[in-house]
Image (cartoon, rainbow, N blue to C red):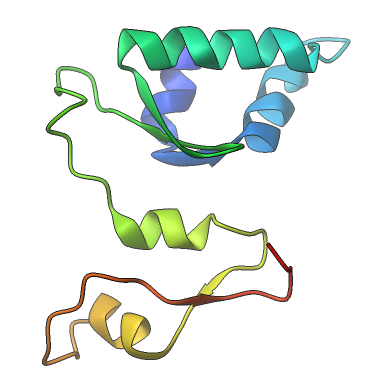
Length: 112
């Protein structure tokens, strides 16, 4: 799979997901430094945004990276491998919350 196709299919992705996808088509896996350099290049080109270390958001083609809205629920669901959107954030996701909130709460067993 080409990198552009990966970005189109995965709006939010982790470094490990990218490494696993790119190593599927090859006999050997790429070096971590090579992948980080590749991600840095695409960040500078405006194809992806870095949310935090190892977590990235892909920008749709033709969109301005400075004005592209980031879906907070997608980001929260990828903050940890076992992340679950919880409490009032889950109600907000399902459209059942009657107040406006600017934060998303997620639960995980992993300590960050």
